[in-house]
Structures are given as C-alpha cells and as structure tokens.
Length: 621
Image (tube, rainbow, N blue to C red; front, side, top):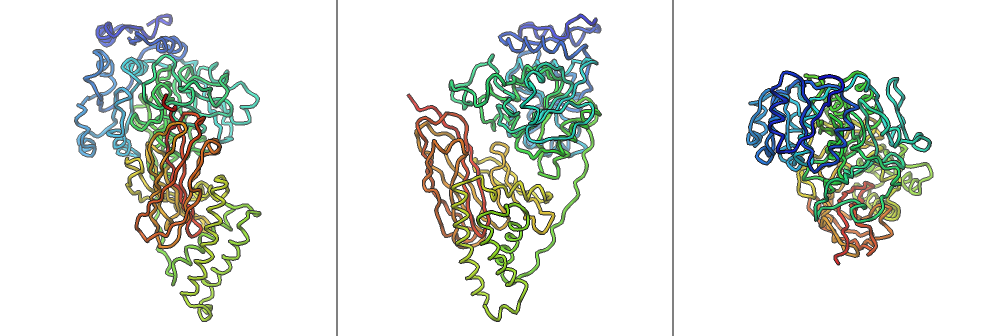
C-alpha cells in the first residue's frame, strides 16, 4: 500500500462481507473495511486515525478466541476478527471457567459488543487470568456492531513512526518528570491550555489520572468527557446532569471529548473508568470506555472497578511507556500489593506476543496474637496508640485530651499487673466501657456534623502504611453481587489493620477495622426529586454492647437532603445482625444524577462505614 492510500475503507454492513473477504484474501495490501453507516462519529474517527497510522499489518495472534453473541453480529464482523487468534472456540465453553483454562491454556481474546461484557463471565475470566504466566485476557468491544468492527479493524493498523509522544495528565499526584514523557499535574492546570495540549497532539500513549465516574475523569477544571452526541440515549437508564438538560458540573469550554483524542493507546487511570455492562452506573451514551473505543485509539486501558493508583503506578507506567512494556500488566503488577484483584483491563491486542511477566508478591504470615486477660483492653489500647501516634489526628484535635487520658488508663492496666490488686477485671472493664461510650458518642456527633473530619481518613492513612494479607474472602455486596473482602496489615505498631470489601459494581463499599462492627446499607436504587429514600443499615457487631449509628451524604447534597435520625444508638448482640432504619428526604430541586450515601457505626473508638450508590430521577410529571 502506498503512502497516500487510505488505511480504512468505509462501507455499509451490506458491503462488509465481501470487503472483509477481499481484505483477508488479497495478497496486495488493501484498506481495512469499517462499517460506518449511520455513525458520523466513526467517520470522523477514521479521518483522525489517518494521522496516527501509516500502514496495515497482521498483528501477532493470541492463542485462543471466543466471540460473545456471535449469532447477533452482522456477517463479516466475526470474519474480520478471525486472524487475531490461532484457535476459536464456542461461547458455551465459558460455562465452567476452571475447566476452560485447564483445557485451553494460553492468552485469550474475548470479542463481543459491550452489552455482552457482563459480570458473568468476565469477572471469572479476569480473576482466573490475573497474575498468571499461562493465561492472559484481552478484549475487543464497542457499543454496537459498528463500533466493535471499528475496534477490530484498528488492530490491523501500524502506528506511524513519527507518532511517539508520551503523556501523563494527573490531578492526584505530582510525579517526577521522566525524560521523554510530557507530564502535567494540578500546577499546570491553572496556566496551561490542557484541552489544547490533549487534542493538539498525536500521542503514542497518553494516560489520564484523576477522580471521576464512568462518564468522566477530572483534571482540575478540565474534564475528560465520555459523552457521545452521535448515539441515542436508552430510555429508563440513569444519566449524568447533562442527560436531563442541566449544565455540566464543570466548565463546558474545558470538556475534552475522549473520542477526539488522537492516541494509539489511551489509559483511563480513574476508578470505574470501564465498568462491565451490567455494573455500569450510567447510560452507554455517556461512558468513557465506549467513547474511547469509538475514537482512533487502537488500545484502550480502563479500570473495571476501584483501585489505589498513585505515585508508584504513575512512575511504573511512564517507564513502561518509554520501554514499550504492556500498560495493563505494568499497572496491575504495581497494584498487586494493594489489592488482590486486577484493576485494569486491556481493549486491543498487546504489542508483544508474550505477556510481560508479573512479579510474585511476597507472602505475609500474620503473627499469632499475644494473650491478654481482657481482649477489649488490648483492642482499645492498640486503637488509642494508632489514633495518638500515627499523625492521623492533628495535635489540636478536639478529642485528643480525652483520648490521651484513656490511653494512660489502658497503659496502666496493661503494663502494671499489680494494679489488679486495686481493681478487679470487672471494675476495669466497667471503667473502660463507660469511657468508651462517652467517647463513641462524641465521635459519632463529630462525624455526623462534619464527615470530612480527620478520623474518617483512617482507611487511606493506615492503608498507605500497610501490606496486603494474602487471604481474600468471597462475600456478598449489599447490591446482591459477589464482592471480595480483604485486609491490609499495618507495617508499624501504630498502624492499624484495615478491612475493605470491594464490589465491581459499587466499588469500595465498606471499610472497618478488624473486630469492629460490620455494616451493609440497603435501599432502592433510585428515588424521585422530592421523595424519600428508605435506608436499612444491617449491623453485625463483634461484641455485645451499645453502638452509635448515623448517615451522611456528600457535601454538595447536604443542602438538598434531610436525614432522619441524624444519630441513633442500638444495643448490639454479638455476631447477630441488627437492622436500623434511616430516612433520606430530598428537596424537590435536587439535581437528577447519581449520588451516594454513607452509613457509619461507632463502637470502641472504631468507625465502620458502608457506602451505597443511588440515583435521583426527575419528579414524575
């Protein structure tokens, strides 16, 4: 193919079968056919791709391929994907994932429209292939058959030699600037036209890191936007503010349409940037992943759920980009010590025929607990040590004097056994529980009044100074879907262990300390403007006694809501569930969009939380 010849050939679905046959069987290079009828956005993406790619080549095939929903795809789509895997097997083979991998070891290519990328079977495939030297998972997808065919077609494109720009845009870190990588952080967002930098460059690889949801990534006032104006919304599905005619929550002149980013590889390093179809928060019209797949990028890296990416992952990714290593393997390997699941998925074939090796994580064996006459004294003593010695609480925190006073008592009870001559174990426990009830009440009131209090940052503060316990427990999220519960072990005496449960749909739904109350939050998925959301908090305490509970919403929602009751007290029974009711009343002017609330429980100086997502819908007319 000469330099002036087009790389892609727009066709109709009626022309696709013969065009694919010609492309695959002709010895001379011919353009890759792409069905674009009714999709003006794909026509623009084909034009944009002409500046990124200069030729057609056959990529290294993966070992095995499976097409999801092959019977629903137009003729020609599956045929275009055939050269991308050495062997293809029927979708029914995925019914038993363990048996599937025993029978078919190797790197798997999963092909299908987005609505087929559901929790079953993708979650099992992700977990089975995570950190495996014998298996690997690559996906090819799109919002419909046309987008899927476009993403298959891009796999045949060879990047232009002059497209070598590497970029990292981060709103959560100020990483070092490695030679060869253009780095932009929050300091640049105030003085640089970030939108112009992103859209005005042809990137070999570019990563966007920031907070967001499945429709956006925040970069200061700039926003990586998932909205595709060329496709229709689906009736009845939740959308962001703009779906209901409201202005964007960020400056609209600083929105960056993701499908217009000229990049060979896009990395969306934000939580839930690429949820599975049945776990998505918003209508596909607004989803980042699908907008990225509609664009010219041959490879899209997205996060299937929540993750703890920070400085280590940014530096690791930059080094991988400079050396050509695989982004997904690099990021997941870097995060292997933080959580036990793969955070990132790859849409698009890897450049190398072999996966980058993933390092083994050192095994951690917890030390046996030291015996104490009263375990509650030991538990509270450890929590006091952490609260007072870890710098979690500032020196002028209002509860420091009372915590310090109780710490002196606990130190005396533990370090001077002769003190038992003055107080019996029953007297010690009675004195301790009286102090705890008073302090727990004060903490609950403080959290209800100001959920951003320093104490509520304990999962991040302690988690950053911990390592992952290899034991992972399968639990059920309050949404009814499977979740994983795992514990991070503190590396220093004043760093507490923390336990977290993560669901691919809901994210990090619960945080608690071991031996602290376990919480789940139940409610309807949606509520109308001006309506009432009934909330049921399910509490399971590790020990009997009083527990304070409360509920709060994000700062931006507080003026539009009323919580009933703000705080309540229940008497828990050890290892027995207790249900507590809350009501969340919404103002009639509450903006329709996705929100969340958090239920918290306080017992023995420990705060447990459970977060639940829901959506506010327009009031029925």
